[in-house]
Image (cartoon, rainbow, N blue to C red):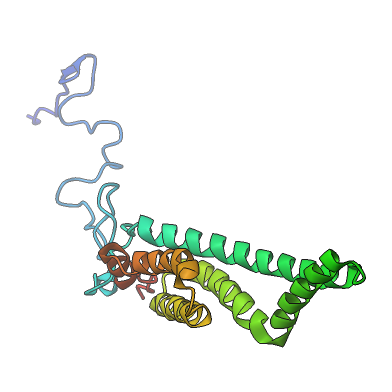
Length: 219
């Protein structure tokens, strides 16, 4: 007597007419089992959209601004630079224009007329004073201040020191030039002093100390 052969049920877990419990489901051999799943490759953890990947070489150093958190330029520094550049250009243009008027006017007046002769003598004295060396400080200080007024915005401490020394030198020269008439230099000296004081406010000093670090190669 022969043993009965295996019998297959016409119905299975998926309903009547479906494959039985012993028949593998479609895609069975393509889907890895839990114990056969490949392990993830070794490497850095996946980067999320909320937290950027920070390499060990990009750690924050003392006195350096963190990446992406650069402190904006202080208002006092911007105001001092604008005042310095504006005044420097205006004074340089004014001195050049006055020098041209003195030179042209002194040679175009009629010296036979007493009134024009006196005016020509005054113009000639001013033009002669500028020609003999007065033009150097009157044009040198404004032009140098204009250049340093632009450079002070690039976040380098030496430009602030240079602009301060230039301002103090300009005030000292004005006081020496008009020692007998100090009231004439009170307004320009106060203007220069204001520009220098704005450079040394605590916000400007902190901004110059916390310079941004360049990006380092993580390799």
